Image (cartoon, rainbow, N blue to C red):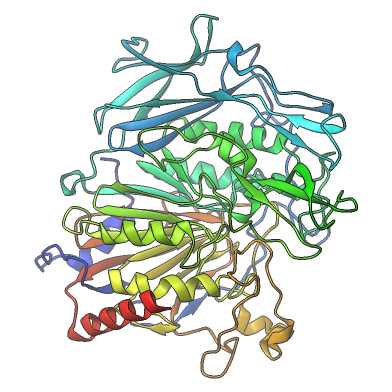
Length: 598
């Protein structure tokens, strides 16, 4: 078990002298124990010192040159690059890497996937590789930068390899290399520890939480802090590298993407290298964010001529999530690796962008068990209404959760349901109104999100009211991305749409059922005029979170901001699952009826 920072022992003192309550089932109330448990909501204003580069002149935080040491392609031939490991399930890891180098140019074509083998060799001692696994899963994709043909400027990816290794011993440490031994092209040796079995006996279990990362110097700082925190698993909750913030010549595009459907794909390769020291040594899990949509020209088809490059009687059809699906598959089906790119289409109208409701998307949603918890990953960027495959999957999965084996129930979704920052305020209301009653009914404990580029923790909340029956929401969109900090609070900024909701903009990347934002009022107001009672702590800063599931009833949440020493915690609370009160039992029943009928 990794050593805990000093604040862990301090928080644990709250519990000394009292026996821990017995494991709870689905019914529970959620108490938060910490220094501000009974205090009013706390705000730490933006100090301006949280970024390596100011956004005032450029409007964004510049990335370092792609030739920088941490980002450049510094291996030769077909030696593996961009190595990352995904936690696939109990005793199962997906090893992924790239060979060759991505190329930008006119008429480029992807490399032949059959040219290089995909092997993982490992053992329990350094340098002694007694076991191996291989697969025929290697692929490459082309990202066209224009809406005409591949004969114009495009990007061809390196070969992307995926090998699923099962039947590993949970909790064991592996020393491994990846590559093609027949070609003599193998990586250097890495070591990784398989997450322990998802049982209560494996607790405590320590998870690092990041989102909205990118490749800025702030991103590097965040990743270094995560490494120092020594988690056993890392969650990246969407918005990976921000390639879509750049034109095909590598220059930054004005905020308000997509611009002519451009995306600078070499940034994906740079991010894979920046992440490698962490992702090769600690297993990861991912979910899609809006910056992974990356609408890329797929083909012209008969239809109403709309969108860039559409001619008379023709409509442009776009692939979405193409890069993410090819590089970072997730465990939707434990029996096979889903790596096919371009499974979803993106059909734009003139000024309104929404995912095609008939599309199917890999990497959109999945679930898995970790020690003490069942974790559900959802997406606001593909259809989520009651008729959607995502909703039907969600209902089937949440009904089947065994709260005796996994008493904690967690949801990870990139776009938050709650945030009191002005940027992206209430952007996911339609999804919230569909899923929040179900979260309450089935006893979801925590909802972790990104998207808003700052940190915020709520109190247990339901329908904008502090409610011990509801989950705590944690927003950690503070990974360090190129767009900069969300520094303004909604109650201070008071945009024009606060008084005139007809001015509230529709966000093209949210799959709202009718394509329009949902307007809700609380106490007759769209925007609060002071920090809401449900907002416990908010601070504009870059950083990361650590969630330690300690036992069936207690979990420790810690937030580390980048400006302080690795061991210092800026926000820390103990979450306690208690037995449900009569009021919570009645509220869950009512929420279940509301959720299934809405």
